[in-house]
Length: 417
Image (cartoon, rainbow, N blue to C red):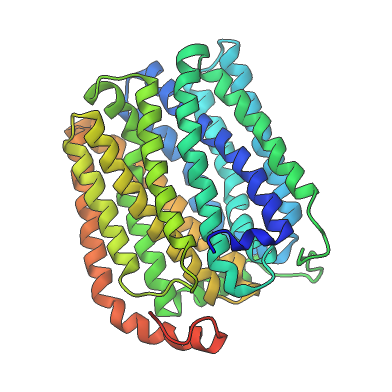
């Protein structure tokens, strides 16, 4: 059953509340990138803005992961959602009053990145607390990813239309209002079901941080997955910062074209998460991770050659499918095998690899695109992802032998697929 994790009340109300909020988040993302490109006509500035939004995640996530393990994750999420609402409201006011400058967007991006560095590991770790039966964790993660990508499908499409009609400020305002939905869902949760209390004892954040890194990188399967995620994020995920260039300069469109391109990625990712949600067993380390990473790399490479909107949309669909299968499957494996008292720290390293490497890639992409063009930049990025997937595939047999006893011991699967 694809939606079996929705039988848990806490997860169900969080699922719908966050779904509304994420549509606003994607509207803001499209509006922000279009606004920057409209103001500067610079691919490099797109990279700078992407870098400023994501670099705090890379720097702060290891430390915030310790906080997610030591404190009430429910309260942390209430705090981060309120701050995110404030960030969207400030952007809306500045834009709608005509006072917005690129440096405002950069500062607000840094602020949001700091908030996300705490929000993401806490939110990823919080999923298990809403699920009473661990065998349904994979389904919950897949549904969470499905909701994320439904928002990515709907949000950019709405944003493209609203930007053309009313301007970017309206998208920022809607995003700010949308955070109310997830705040309400958190307040409405049943506090008696697995809502962790703060751990009162004193702790050494640096000692806990070292313990988390030793735990994550001391076991080969976890280390290999994190390295795969990091390379794919560094070399591949930054393709998104160049979407305004392809929408306007390559395909000859406007903000609605940008919305369609982003929605195509979301539709492909939605198909990928639907595939994962339909699986009844935990995702194993077979060929799924390298194949999906390779599909993503081939997709963005093919997209770089296209000057036709329909071919471009098709290739982005393939790319979205590949990257979401790879990331959601990695998330499922990690969350299934880690100890709960280290979950926040491991997921913070996952966040650092997934979200934290992207800003470096965004900056690198902006520099390369300015020198060699957007198309050549994506060819290089896509081929790097394909090569990485081949290297990982060669290691799958040895990794499978190490991880299989864990699944068997936990009773999740009788044997690795």
